[in-house]
Image 1 (cartoon, rainbow, N blue to C red):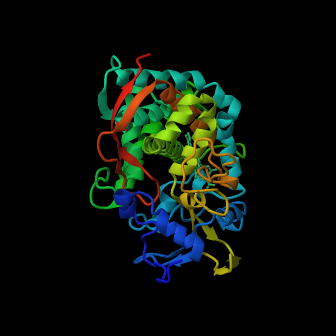
Image 2: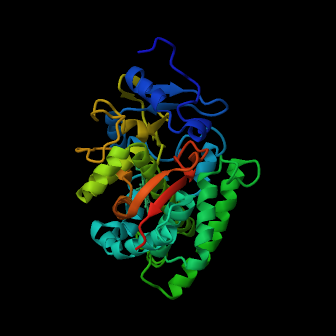
Image 3: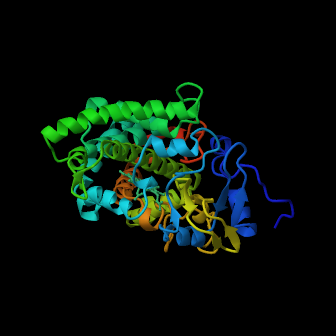
Length: 415
Ligand code: HEM
């Protein structure tokens, strides 16, 4: 254990750290061991408690009335002020009981294991098509795994499910990058991250206002039709909450699975023995997918606000204090996972918190699992060789671990 004072600056959630080095696992490990619930000042903003152990994150997440999601969605080093986060959108992730459950129910039928199984054929078709395009005649090629494969794949699956016409899929991609990558100069519009998110949100809201009106007239078997005709306590869903719902689904459905799939291939390239194990036994696909979600943990953090004074692991938390739940840290908790820093496709049990836990447990977890199972089964079957052809470029964000570019040299067996 180091005797140096614990860091009080923001390097445990600083976006530059994520962009330049990836997740700061060493800093999180130190916090888990020395100060698992630790206060950080936020220069120019309101500070927060960093919660790094799995047990504490579970305890907090399972008490949604004591630790609320509103008003702070996540901790941002810069940009979106607390008030701005609330007025920008109102969706499941910043709602609390009892309101939260009534909104969640309107979409949950679409995400049950049974409903999701029906999408398997379509997910397989999209995956195979993209791989065949990448494969050519099976010769060695170079490409970008993100732009050629994971980004179009997750975008296609989600847009299809929402009912967004194919010619508009690129728009979804632009808006979601702009919202999540507001603090990354590549995606930011103008100098102010808050204004950049606002611009994307306005575009997305205008688009879905028109699409929802169209589907109310001519309903189809898609999510835009379901949500735009859904009732909350017998009344149609208010426009702001309806549009926020679409925003949440577009962002949550794109930015997460894409990064799990990209990060999963990075992990397999860095651990060729694990890739061989998977290729030798496709029965390991399910456990490999859980390990990929544990390992990549694409959602870095969400925040809860204490509604009363409360003690967490010996720390006195005051009413209105913010608690930052660091999921990737929980996923490396040495009290729970054997050899947490080792990537193992056959890890079992694997009680990771990549999808969170409790009231707000990821609504799309079944869909994400389906997509990742299809992706890694197909890759295990068809990828003959693969190696990095350049450095991985990561997004500058304190919130989602984004892989922007991932050049690879590969040979894929043509279909
Ligand atoms: C590997 C992929 C994914 C990861 C790692 C992930 C992770 C998460 C996490 C950590 C949460 C918050 C859980 C909590 O607070 O306890 C969440 C919530 C949510 N996710 Fe996902 N997610 C993924 C894919 C998806 C997909 C594909 C969709 C939709 C199509 C989706 C939709 C949502 C929604 C709507 C919520 C809010 C649920 C609520 O507040 O009740 N996610 N997700």
